[in-house]
Length: 187
Image (tube, rainbow, N blue to C red; front, side):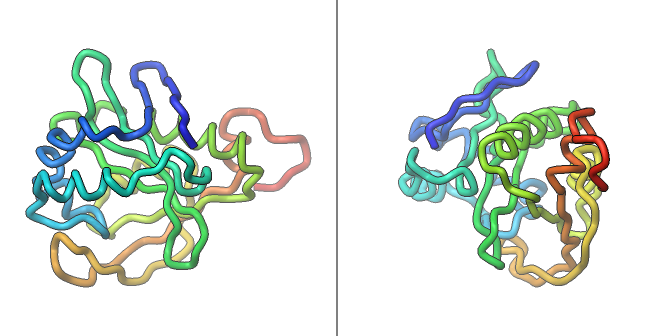
């Protein structure tokens, strides 16, 4: 879907070919790419260009992603939905290291979760983190995700299978977090 969203500090927009240099620069950092399952390291401009070439604005909501843009700075990360191993939508994200620990990812993910639950009618959304990625797990916890299991997942950047924590956020929990859940619905 060709959608543009705004949060308090961020513009969330569709990826563009012109984003390739910043994507390549920020993902060519093992401290970022090593937290992601499907991103290689080293990460080259050609990797960013190839990924952007696959982008279509007509994707369904469960496969829509957003470049995170900080006005005056440019692209600082990406947050979006993809089909997971079970074929159901999952949310994933990355943020450039210079922008860590400022609440940008929680803000971006919260905004796209609002959009996702508003337009899809979905009952829940899955996600997860590698067990060592405490910061990402904290983002998910702040958003209301709960841990539902563990397993292993291959990390392309690290070339190994790693312990993975599976998480899930229900629509009811999301709405309750915002004070919008209908009375009587259980979390």
